[in-house]
Length: 128
Image (cartoon, rainbow, N blue to C red; front, side):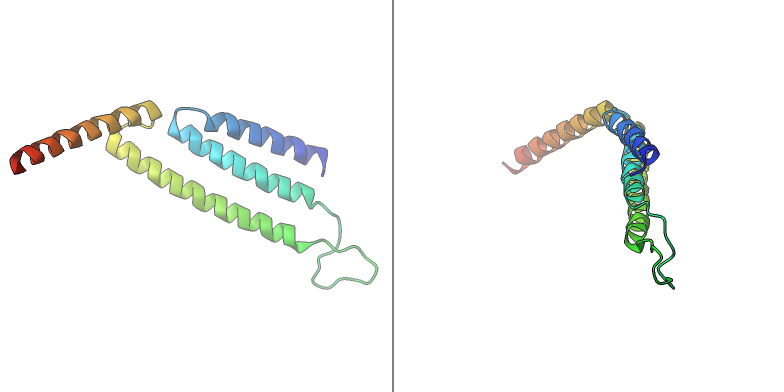
């Protein structure tokens, strides 16, 4: 693998891992994106072979392997779908809680659970 591809993949993965450890959910989504792109860069860099297209090869000439290119395209599409889903979920969470911080989400969840416990206690007292 080319040294430049390895360094780019390492920087992308390191930045993505750092962002995944943040408390803001938008940064977590950006971290997932960077880790996904680092995997794609690693795949492209590891399959970097000079050669002709495998459609009509000339005998005795090196031919590039099309499989890593197809896998890289597949990884890009899956990464795009994953990021789209995460952004849609983040939009819904931000619309409901008016925040994208994990600590705010935990506080909102605790308030909701306390309200459900109070509702359950009222229902049990009415039944019993």
